[in-house]
Amino acid sequence: MPHSQHALVEEFPDRAELIRSLIRADDEFAAAAVDYNEVNGEILRIEAEIETTSDEYLETLKKKRLRLLDDIHEKLSHNGNTGT
Image (tube, rainbow, N blue to C red):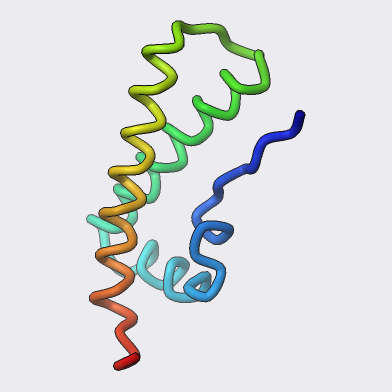
């Protein structure tokens, strides 16, 4: 069964341009995006059975991905607040 890729622009499709802009302009945001992509890539490899690991480790990675998404969402909200 194919799994969602969970790319940042998939997670926040209405903020794709803001994501690209912040990656270029904000080192902290760029670092969070890199961390997210690394964790997400590892999860995808495990789910595709390219890599093997324990269920506990996979769950730890998924929780880390969620924390990173929360942090990224917070930064996107502060930088892209349109007043709505």
